[in-house]
Length: 217
Image 1: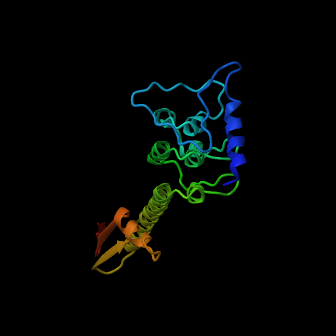
Image 2: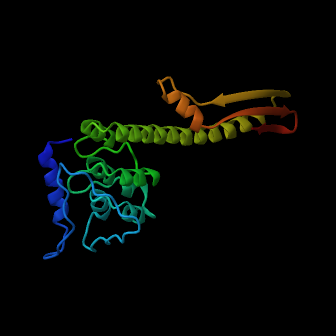
Image 3: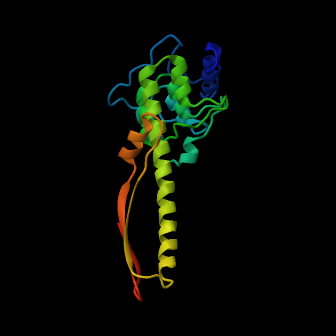
């Protein structure tokens, strides 16, 4: 994270999006706490010319508006950097907008995306000394990585399963075999999380002469 001046630079960037003569909401100062969002309060819609509506909503802690803007957005769109080189998640973390951070992570916003400075949101939270926010981001980043690895593993298993069945159809003798597998990690604390969210299964393989093979799991 940059010095305090960088916050003002970021704020100026968003301030330029206001329409000429328009009186926008009061800008929070660096030493002020983010304003609490009033339940049921109507949130202003972003201006049509606003190139970064999600980042702007994240800056001002408008969690409800963030959820609306996230509807239908792809992961690639969530990775978008604004004119200051930050994703919406970076902006929310720098402003300590916890409800916005939660909304972004629940929508699948990549927690490991780097800013133009090469920082991930977790680094911003650590620099701020915000332990709860840092833990939230660390859990999200590990969970997203584990899910990505699981998806890759499932694809590999399907490909190997098809190759194995093709091999069994080439005149091998009768046999049966059980294969048990599960995912884990040697990293402290990560292995238990991976085993909890990752699939595991036991496959039984049968081969009969003239009948090809069958794999059940």
